Length: 41
Image (cartoon, rainbow, N blue to C red; front, side, top):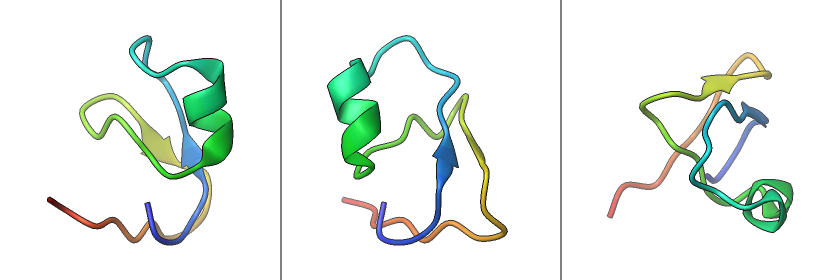
């Protein structure tokens, strides 16, 4: 996650992963901000 604020709705990331703000489970999460910029591998 390069830009924006995610709303995590997953059960797979730990609280530390969610707080770091550099990962998101795309299939279940949403954006809190108006825009998310992601880097795909």
